[in-house]
Amino acid sequence: MSPERAPFSTLSFPVGSLGIIAMDSCKELGEHVDRWLISERQKEMRGAEAPVSFLIKSRCPRFSNGESKAIIDESVRGKDLYILVDVGNYSCKYNFMGVENHMSPDDHYADLKRVISAIAGKAKRINVIMPFLYGGRQHKRSVRESLDCAAALHELAALGVQNIITFDAHDARVANAIPQIGFEDVHAYYQFIKAMLHEIPDLEIDKKHMMMVSPDEGGIHRNLYYSTLFGIDLGIFIKRRDYSKIVNGRNPIVAHEFIGDDVE
Image (cartoon, rainbow, N blue to C red; front, side, top):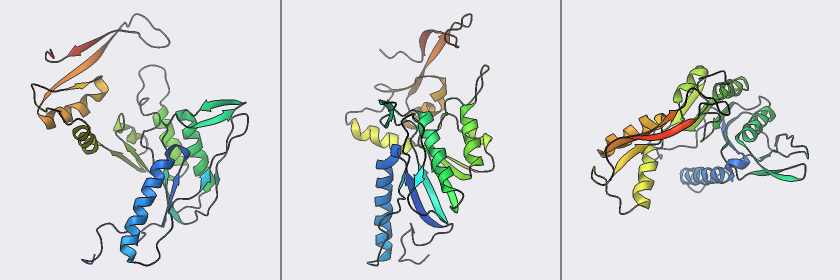
């Protein structure tokens, strides 16, 4: 790398020319990423003609009965594609038999598979960026129940996805379901701490004024990291269940108990 070249280079494409498909749930994020990439590309081009956009136009129109299909309006042949989808975006809506319906995680995931199917194997590589991992909380089997996350990862791998990028997965061990493809679990520790310090100016980080509390057992490792980093105490809420009863398929919670130092 020459001294004049910026550390980030968009001039070379080791896999294929870059393409971004931002689904309806991630339009704003996709546009932000696109603007940043164009800005970096313009810096390197030094006045030469830079690409107008890396975004690839796509849509998922729906029929009146709720069924849908994916349409890609540009060529994706030979491209290194990154598909952005937020399965937790409930603000997306569609018309179902004359009724406005909010899209569920299942709807977003189904549209993702439709888009991959519409690519029809023409892309050089397919990467999925999914900030909230679909089915991430259904990562283990406690009773006779489905393993939605592992099943979804298997489906994406079978459709030709080569890399999956997510943020703060509920349990990153779900990557064991797809050992032959890339699975990146990006932790947002720095962004969380930066936002907290910026938004709460009177925050006093010491054992006297602050405690890190985990809402359940699942978040204990993340909160242990924060409490160790800040040098403060750690607390946790645990759920007491009545294992002699089953209500709506689960043992009912009878109490939430706090374990930790006195917070008064």
